[in-house]
Length: 267
Length: 225
Image 1 (tube, chains in turn green, brown):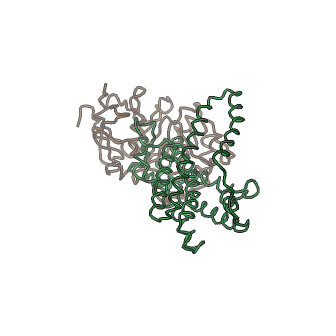
Image 2 (cartoon, one colour):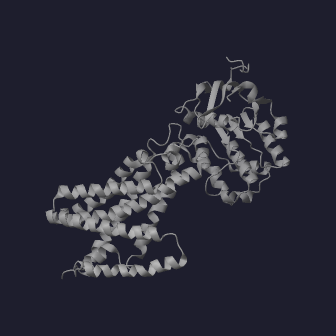
Image 3 (cartoon, chains in turn brown, cyan):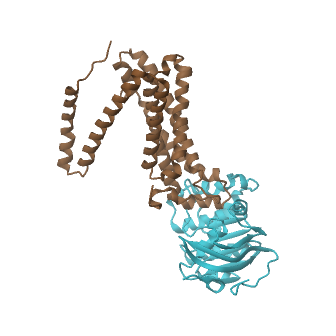
């Protein structure tokens, strides 16, 4: 069974569907039409670029080239997270990058070494979609986790300094904020696991079915990827929080406000 | 010693401030502040608004670095490193305290879970006694801290500070949200702590009467223009 291709001409019909949401926006006079149009153009251009590039990578199927592509994905995710959280790039980019690297690579290696146990898994066809799914979820979880953590520290600065003044060490003073951020970051993944298959057919499973796999194979892939995503997000969030505090919390225990973009002029 | 230094015995001193200068957002608040607080002193700090009284209290906790001069607490120089140990000899009450999340009881118990406070024992009877002295009902213990009024929060913060039985109490406007009765109750409690050094910022007449010394920071430092 092979997947039915969509011609570019036929794909153009998909854009007709945009008429409905755009008409609603016009009717409601929402000031988001230009943003929406820009987002659609960006999506199209980005996906076309990625499609062409991935075609080359899949054709060559070279591990080094695949690794380079993963690196590009990690850097783009890193920049998106830092910008999305309103933090200064120079202060947190390295910590976020390491957390993404670990959060993506550990579940990915686990996938290759223990779940597939097949050399084919080292091919670009497996490595890129699987790492992409893990990384995409790590990105979402990191944005929620890091933002919740630093917003909490900023908004509850008095509660934080109170705990320091009461004799808490750094770990003890940060713990309530880490706990809250970790919970907020993982809650969507937990909720997704609890309703998966009932509310919506998940991406991995859909991909396997569309690719010609039978539903049981698709389910096994989906279970494995969900666990990998959960493990990856947990690892990346805890590491992102801990690593970004390095150098941004002074010797006396207070958060350096320079970490926030609003506190400085440049990023 | 500067012309603004207060001559005071340094033997048995709890806090010695020497030629201290503090700044906020890059501009100097005051300089050449020299003060000594002995063990058991009850000192009230006064100065015009914006002079840097609260910043001074925060600097005693090591949260605001000195731009010049030094602070010594029980003979040990305050540095960002030593502040962690020295904080274990102090308790602080902010003028608008944030007690953290959870119930009042959880907020009172929380510091006793810290490693540095493991030698301390929390006596529930002591909580009950302090609650009664500060006119707070026992039922308040089960309420979330977010539901407390400003006055209740202030009194719970004072109780939390007293329960830790530190050598030094740093209080920033501890009665600003309280009526006279409750203000007097706090003054009475503080007066009873004969061994505790209390440094407070307040304009409350009840505290002014209770404290041994009223120190006008203007007379002990140089104000930067």
